[in-house]
Image 1 (cartoon, rainbow, N blue to C red):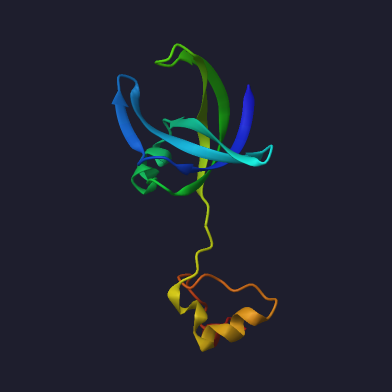
Image 2 (cartoon, one colour):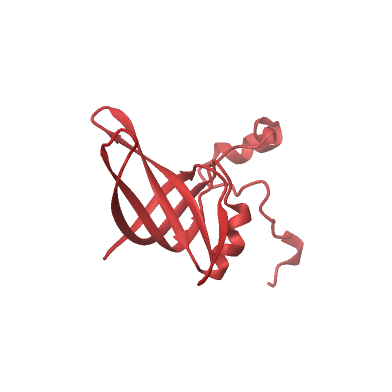
Length: 137
């Protein structure tokens, strides 16, 4: 058994499939790797029958960057040209969204410039901020 962690972009919206043994979610992710001076993309099938992953399926949309942890398996198949291909599949134990770090349009405003010039990290704009007047001490 191979336990893996991988990061990739979702190829198309996640599907929830109802089967004889219950429902499961299914999606394909594109995992990019830089090898021998060029980008190499490997497609990996991701499947899970965990209830929280099935509920998460509506947010697993095309283009989202995700971290998937689970058990890796592979299978051989023959494509339409008669060539053997390998299919990688992960049975997911954990799925997490990766923040791409996109800046909002207000990042260039003078109010935010002072906050970004020092070395302290700046929380995302949509993160709830503590009320400084409501401190417990």
